[in-house]
Image (cartoon, rainbow, N blue to C red; front, side):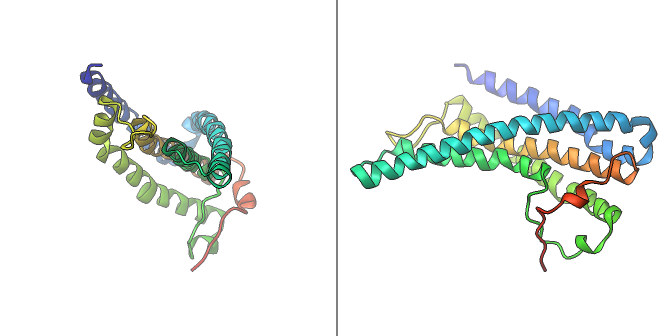
Length: 221
């Protein structure tokens, strides 16, 4: 297969990312003119939530595969004394898929552990402002950095359809490496949804129910 295909595709995806960048100022615009674009912001939130729900389905399949594969490893190893590299790699790939794809789902469900001594001290509006600051100062820059630093290695992996370094391993290393940008894209999209929800709550256009159901937060000094 012609390697130029992957270089061209990567270029198109890069331009698509540049075109979509203005979406990330939408939460700030929502704060300024909520009556004009508030409904559109809510529609975008719902669309992103559907994408994240699809990611949840993938994560559930990966979790079931992980359990089955790990059980097979244990039975084969301890009961029959057998060991295969491809099976061990399959366990690793299933776990990576569960973790990398599921990160955006955890962000949606407010299930990430927070180590924050300031956020609990503020009321609902103060927490929304902190949420916006955290997303714009940390989540968005880090995810964009991930996308812009690993493109060359990923392009090479797809050009040669990189496989395992072991002779009996799985020929899927190029897909394994693709999980990194997929993780970044999903986190960016769900982060945008969280920023939009915070902006809509601050403007009174969205019910303030998240703060009363945030049992998943863990805070500490």
